[in-house]
Image (cartoon, rainbow, N blue to C red; front, side):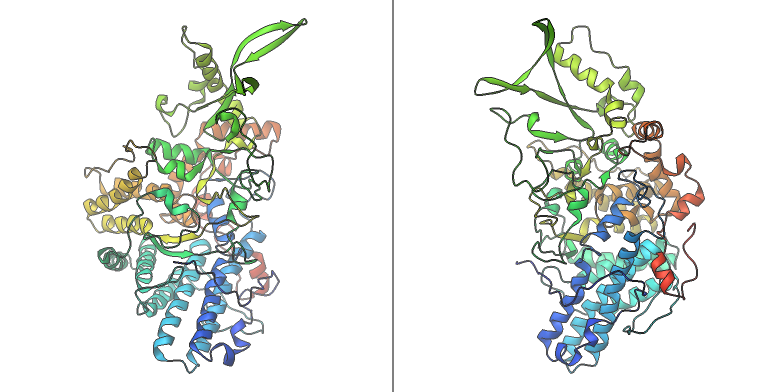
Length: 622
């Protein structure tokens, strides 16, 4: 089915000092024209959808902040990296723009609903279109609560006059979100690509009930409410897991059976295009323009490997290799170096590293010349041959935290040839390569966002905002909390089985192994917490999933980072050398309760507090 390219009715999302709640929506301007017939009303509805796909929303910022600020993100230490280093500032313009994006959706939906209701369109049309619009408003408010906690709540159309409105407690906002979703339950069970249907509404309602239960809001009631919603969707068979995990992140994925709700983009639009690849992909790695702004942390890669060695999802989640280009905006990679493809043609990232082999040294005209094993083209050696190795996780006592002392004390066997000796020497010096080299190759990139054929700053990828695998893992958590851990394990094992099926070789993968029923309820709770991080790594729900279980589990996750030996060595090198391409340790290694509590939410942006007198406070720690 052809992708929906949302009509942009008006996209002036300029930053200003007025409150985000104080916007005159488009639909108040020509109500009689816009709502004179069903076709125009539908175009106006698509305009509401379109605001979810702008660069301020899911087109960039609602990928950028949740992924980079998750606790497993990296950026250069530049003095403006507060979000990534978990030291966010309320003055950060990125936070302000992200906040404004969801309120733009709210503002437009509020006006749309008011004008739709007063129109002469049929009750059937009003029910369908208002239900879709209310889903968008529900999603916008859910996002705001997830990142900012208590937020201003408004369901009536704004005017051009100033507005004063305080923060509504998050439990009340979520209750209103449920009301919107209940109203949307009666829309059609089917929809075109990129639009919501009643099954997506039910699946999302289950997620909202889950969040309310975890937050302690009528916990027993909402665990059961979540179960009922998830059961209905699960038993319907409407959604299924894709057979291959990597297929979820290909170009223009539009009709995936796993997609519950997604945003569709266009590379020709100046507003609704997916710009995230530009921020997350390595420089000179695609046909377009990339800036290596954000990477995944070394601790994130090693955590995944330690839990599921060889999991096929690792290669689909972390970009560790790409063909070498001479710069940005290059249509093709550099020409192949030799007669056959080789490591010389590519760039490698943590935990992989390339190296050369010295075969001999000899004197030429009185000078010592190094003789390398070489790459040949047309029978002639053209340059030293590159070999590739990686951290030997299989040999480590704790693959989640590779021991520097173990690596530094490796010794090649006495009978080792020159190739093995060279490999061992590379491993012995990985501290310098990955912690003290000041090179972007010391971190893996985000493979899910990577588009090798990127067009300028626009990616050829749509974005699944909510997919069936996430629902299954949330559903498993619900069953576990309701006392049926075996059902929870069975649901989780569906996700793990799909991961095994995703192996790209003919040999089936043995990881991730199914979870045994001998696990305790608490063990299942913790494993589900980390499984969601692994499954959803590099996706928009990453920020929330790491924080949704509160400070106890946030600490468990961040300890992987703060205790990582390469990370600590890199942080120490920054102190000594002021090298921006180094890691940071969160809060100088002190994961105090106050630090963790502060990092459950982002701050209310200064721009909103300055413009809205109704907001007199901020989140904890800001």
